[in-house]
Image 1 (cartoon, one colour):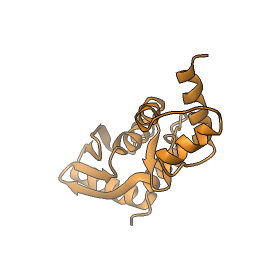
Image 2 (spheres, one colour; image 1 turned 30 degrees about the vertical axis):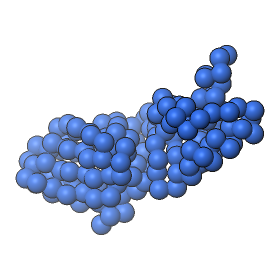
Image 3 (cartoon, one colour; image 1 turned 180 degrees about the vertical axis):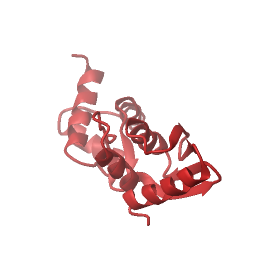
Image 4 (cartoon, one colour; image 1 turned 90 degrees about the vertical axis):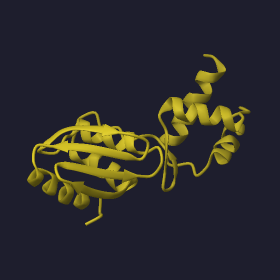
Length: 148
């Protein structure tokens, strides 16, 4: 196994045990495994394994292969700052870099009335079938995300 692969596996395992508050802390923990890595290398590794920075530090994305609502709820509670509506469009605001994590969960477990999602860095646009569906979706997402 090459050094890069080993380093990424160790980072993945550490993040699987819980959030790590900073890249500096991650570098320190890697050092305990005999691995020296620069901030740029750690940043690249985090991006490659799909880690995101949440409220408590770097975490692995919420993976929910079965597509149940629990993964969506975790993503909403962990990363969403606001849910709003404009006509048939619902707009979700997240912290920087977190929109894709939430959009992935929305795509895996699409709420009723959703036609599709588009995610940027910190914003998700959700197309719905009607204004009524958009209103219902805003209420549902706010409730699931603890924003009601």
